[in-house]
Length: 358
Image (cartoon, rainbow, N blue to C red; front, side, top):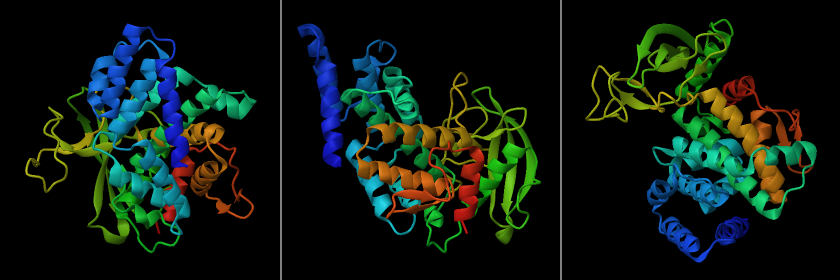
């Protein structure tokens, strides 16, 4: 399987160089050398803002994918390890991603996906839904975009949990942060706490806070009821139901995103700091837990499904089956109790987190 991915990347390199004149080809070669040497920021600074060709978009997609800390060979290894695990494919998959990703992984993966999408558009989904016939190169781009999307889902869950082993099918671990994250998503979706199990969480609205980006979020404190010393704060975006929980990373002041303290034990942490939104751009779409998970799971499985080998497709189907609360049957290669053609919803994700973290 690793060999297939490497061959796919080589095919993309061939595509990049085809049809170029000598001077243009030399420029492409210089950028490709930066990519090969791990100078991902060099590729980005050279091409970003002026990428008007498919070739440049592919290079930028690859640069951001690698910058996230998740190389192509690493991604395939993570997927394979997850499918072989007896402790829940998706949980093992998330754990593998969390150990490899960089601090900017989610933002980098968002960029990577956007550049691949600029090349392929909706063709991956159209191939799944309407039997659109894709070329081998288009299938390879779908595979790259699908892997990037799937990493976004795993990276997001790693942000909202302390111990992803709690999601394992045979795990006896309960992660209070993961439980309160699911409760926060439910609260944001419903607009109140009536659907939240009172034996698991309680909700306290803290107030509105305006950050350096100029964006204002409502902070809520979610207490893990079985151990009320475990309290976690969440930022909510939107003014009407359903709302969304913002993905945060570390702590910062309301006036500046820098310094951003990793945790409350960090030397640069101050008592006036708040949970810090991962998105610092006031003009960018908010990076919310539900949207990232839903879009990544749906788009990722669609994109990989049309392009991957049967083994890899089965691996990804197993991930989606678990999230849809089904049981994957390896003998029949089917998802018992759930329809894999169904799109994952925010409520599916909340149910998955609640059902598996116990």
